[in-house]
Length: 354
Image (cartoon, rainbow, N blue to C red; front, side, top):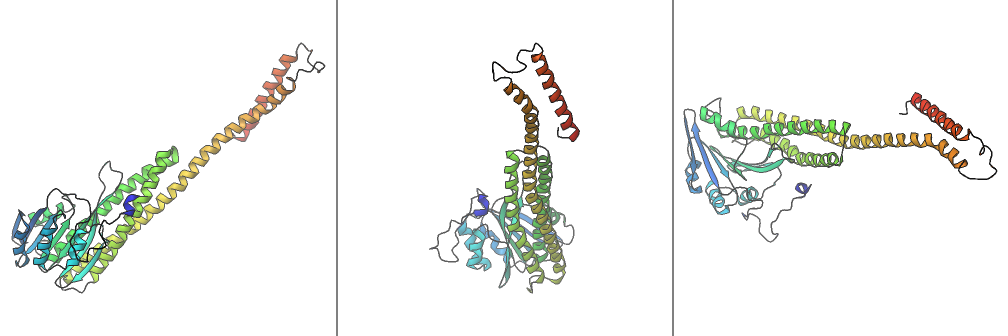
């Protein structure tokens, strides 16, 4: 639940457009990698400084500049100054946990996304902010840390498979966005598997740990809802954008991304309903178990009630009490007790009470 109540540690006295990194430092160093390509040529290398990115702004080929680590704000300011990025855009890049959005600036598009990850054995979905700047012949991506879901895109660039090296920077941006959206399906599938196993546990043998995990899943669904719903808006804005940076052939692919976001929302809402219903199922299961215990206790109490009554009467120890002088009084008491017990057990069994 704390992840749903993040506090932005930014002073209110700092003027707008100030580039100050807000967030956890997730990378030890800033890593800059470049793919510079065209149909028959590819150059891939890692750069030592941000200044080495500057020539790729005006190259006739398509360039993908990827930056891992956002804590070196001075280098980001140099990059933004050279590529003409607005100070508010730079501020949004380093102020993590932004709402996914698209902004149309003069000469470039600024896109904010959230990349999700659900590692094996983890109990929470982790999210990292991804910022993408789409220019005429370049794409700049900013990540909080090293490691992403774009390895398939890199492999296709290296092999020249498909149309990725034949198309422009808008198609490359589409592939990056599509990879992030497709990974949402992987995360939701893992959550779906966990919901399925948890449903069986709730139906069979629920515990306090089960209830705690249900509450955690409810928080996860709220968290995912805050990220996935704006993604539909992002995809729809890109599909309908009248920017010259997005060519008409790419719009068809962006429409496909929009369809995927709609599917994600439908799946997420279904899982959300299942988790909500799981809480009611847990309460119902626990209530049924308690009722079963109470029924058994009630049956035994009912069986022993007449025996307690008889024992109470003949335990009063009055001197002139009937039957106290009988030699067969004690065996008769036990015979009556056994007959009463067996009779009542037979009646309860016939009714299906135990």
